[in-house]
Image 1 (tube, rainbow, N blue to C red):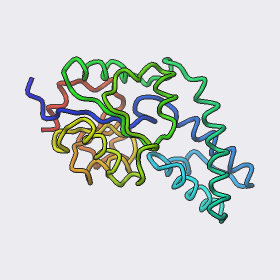
Image 2: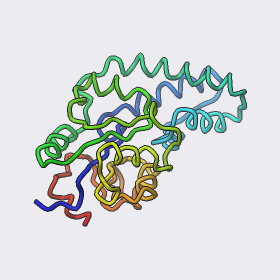
Image 3: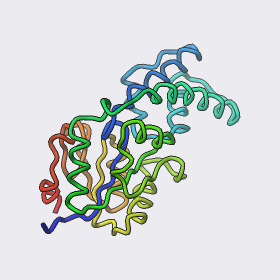
Length: 218
């Protein structure tokens, strides 16, 4: 099979597993402590964004300002709550079609990398049993810039030994799709075509994705 891509790079939250709900619950708890309301609509702005950038957005919603040291403490508090929740995750929280598609990619000889802003990807992948399906894991512990900067995907392509033109990114966030575009990569949006209209292809979940459909990206 002569595929248009040689490597697949996957975001984590909202693409492979549903950890977005835990992020939301932790951010909402922090907002409650700070005395303002943080809604699910507000949470959409945090998709694909790094922890500190997410905190800045949350504080702007609350109209609050803190020193760098105070922000570090707030981010650590939120992360503690989040880690407590994701530590109880298991394979039942893998999103529809994700495991089957990862297996299909491996069977087809495609290289596979994680490209996530999460600094807790190791815990999540281990608890859900997904770790063995990745040739490289690039996450928030290895990057400096947040999406839509393409750094995380460029590092993933480099780790896989693939040219950017040979890579396809799977993302559920506009910032991630933009990062793929900036990195010179094709992208598959997971979710709404209205929100992810800049993606080269959009599917509702990875259950609708096959290795053969990668030919649509040519």
